[in-house]
Image 1 (cartoon, rainbow, N blue to C red):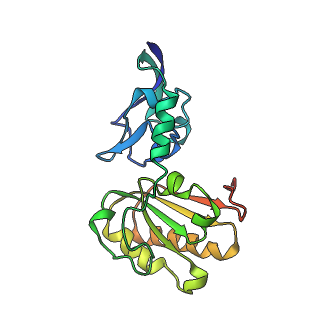
Image 2 (cartoon, rainbow, N blue to C red; image 1 turned 30 degrees about the horizontal axis):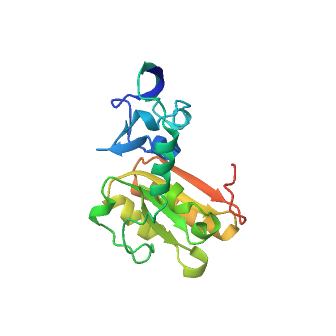
Length: 203
C-alpha cells in the first residue's frame, strides 16, 4: 500500500539517538551510530520522532510500505519490558573510567530515586543505554571529577541526566554539566526531571 511514513537521511543524522527514544513503537534503532527505520509496519506515520531531531534528518514521504501493525507493535513493546541493565557496576563511584561498553554508547546518568519514582524507567529510559546511578546527598561526594574522566576517555553518542525535582538532585545535574565542560566534548545532552509522584516534569 502507499502511505505516509518517515524517511531518515543518514548523511544528516548525527547519531544522537533522540528519535529512537521518541519512537514509542520501536520502529527506529541505532545501527553503526546512525538512526535507521527498521520495520515499516512499526511506524504509525505520526512522526513523534520529527520534532526531537536536531539535525532535521527525518521527513515524511509517501511510498509503498507495509501497513502499520498495532498488534505486532504491542507484542514488541511487551517483549521490551524486561530489565534493560546492560552492564555492571552501575554506581558512579564504582564504575571504571574506561570499558568496552562505554564506546559509542548512549549514556544515562540517573539519580538513585528515579527508577523507583517512575514505573517504566527501564523501558522508557534505560533501554539502549549504558546506565550510571548515584545520589550526591547520600554519597556526599562531587561526581564531577569521575564523570569528567569517563567522558574524556570514551566516545558517547549522547548523555541523558535523569533526576528528581528535589533540590539535592541538583548536585547530580551540576556535576554532569561540569564534566561536559571539563571534557571539552560536544555531546548532545538533555535533563529529564521527575516529580515525587512519578510524573515527568515539564520544563
